[in-house]
Length: 239
Image (tube, rainbow, N blue to C red):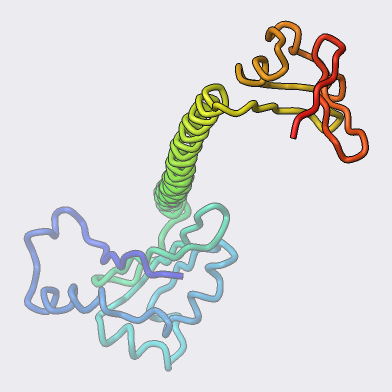
């Protein structure tokens, strides 16, 4: 809990009547440790006002008041969000005076307004902190997504390069396959002819339409270690 302020009570007509003693006393009031005011502080968490005069204090408590010239004091607790936040102290340096119920009521209303203001400020700070935290999370998430996008771009570029390289190799292979002076066949595992070059047609003496979609076994037969090619139903031996 905190001591919000320590206010000496003065009338407006006294503003120009400061004595040398008062000039020295006022600054000292702000330095008072209210931990020594346990008789007052014990009631504050219960939201009870302490309205005390010098004469009613125990002897061992009067020394501090006398040192600072305090004759009476009103201590009002400050609550923020129903939690005891601190207190305001109103000193009277001129006379012992207990505040009336009406005065206390008005002072309490003012202190309640202060509590509401502090609550609002606390909520604003929490909202600002939450907003900052959210902004940091969004920034971190955005950075992560940007890094992932960059990685995807690099991966796509690499895939495109590999695809282009593969296309060039396939094109080179097809050129070599088609222009080879040797008969070339590309067949499936069961012997279906998938691709062939012009030399293959020349070797078998057939057109590409006749050879297309055929099975290689229709053209080649093994007999006692010898290989025969069939063309127009007539076999001829090949070495």
